[in-house]
Image (cartoon, rainbow, N blue to C red; front, top):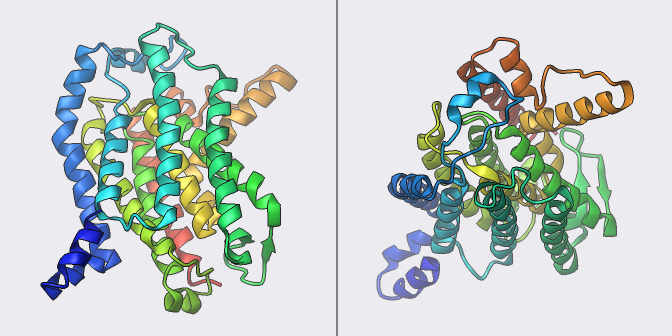
Length: 360
């Protein structure tokens, strides 16, 4: 929005041309989203508390969590607001990738928000049925990736690239659609499963979004992408603004979500952030690197799959409780210890993912 204004003003004063730089606008997006979250956070927490939007706590979970009953949830709406405002203000809105990522993020957030609403206001502890939730996420995901497939201008935009081994790649053709759908919906649900402890999901999301911002910037620059031997996609660099907005809004939310949390993000935040990471990775063609950097999300999702599968097939559980962060709690780890150690793991995995830029 402001890009067009500053472009028009530059004819009267050349100094406004500085706002054409992606890096500056990304920084401004970080600060804008962070400011929105920090300024509106206390008001939103009070409003959620007054509306009695308190998080229900499972009786079969760790007993230490019972004290969290009543903590306001749906704080992810604050993250969505920060991301949306910062992206609309500092992005070039003529770039279609900007609208795709906003559509996926907001659409997934609406589904998650309705699920939260049913759990809290209708006293329906299950919220949306799994079928309806996946149907909604599927409609959002399929719509986005089908559009990307239709408007793709070159095979690069639908090719699966393998990290480290540059000779390995696969022009997926129409299989790009189901593959990308699985990436988006899978990441969305993986982040949702991770969101079980104070600050556990938001910090890895912040770190992965920042790292994806590096890939986005490099992939949108013809010289840098050629030097690093990664796919060059015209216009994808503009998504660094969106990545910056996730980073800023996430930091602002973490201010209130850090242990002991004043607010939880709820499905409105977890589903939307996971979908956002997934669609960015799909657009920049770095899905496999996303799986590396988001290893904590993968670990959480796999632990649930293994737990359910083992119980149904063998009648035995592998973990004391799934997702796996609860397993470590029940082993005696204090909640802050689990959280920080998972953060450390994410930092390591993000560095490994970034290293693939050079190791090719």
